[in-house]
Length: 109
Image 1 (cartoon, one colour):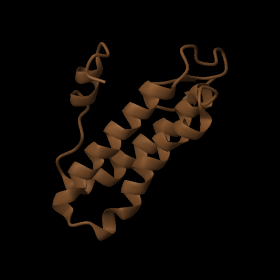
Image 2 (cartoon, helix red, strand yellow):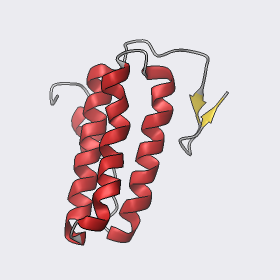
Image 3 (cartoon, rainbow, N blue to C red):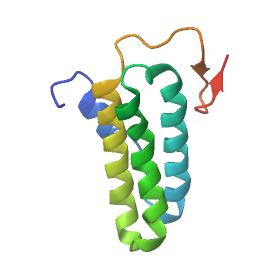
Image 4 (cartoon, rainbow, N blue to C red):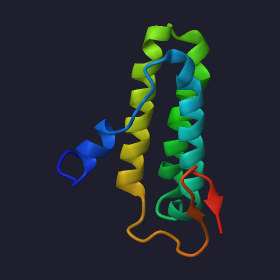
């Protein structure tokens, strides 16, 4: 993955909150973004790409059972899993014209 242009910056440039209280909301937005992205990338490999949403969702659901000091590393792992799955399995050409995403990560027509 490190040989893909922009990969290192994309993975390490993401701002995962340091405050454990903000992790839950951050993961919620990450899951939402993955589900929305599936609208136009899912046709590339729907089974694998759906896991770009299930990985951060699984972390979100386990937070209450994790020691809080592990929340951020778990969120980072979820982000890397999502980014990796999207990079590997997203089609070269997304479905065009159906949706676009505004700066809040919400689909718009």
